[in-house]
Image (cartoon, rainbow, N blue to C red):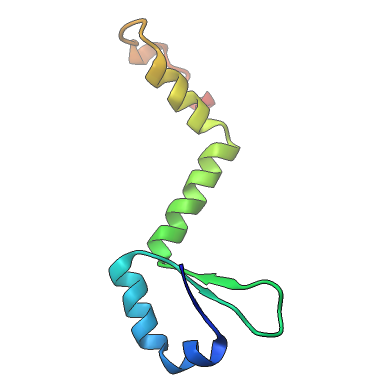
Length: 85
């Protein structure tokens, strides 16, 4: 992940944003006087990460994985409790 200090980021902001969009890779902004940095990424990538976290937190990913591993055959869609998914 490329890193920039605020001065260089401000100077090259448009170019950096184009590279984020082109490479689909985030960049790190690291202020000199702080111990932690900030990550700048494409909005679609952020939304995807947030959706994955939500699906994990709600247990949905576990249910999907359980069903993927289920080799018992087909499931009648009328037998699915859609409200509990």
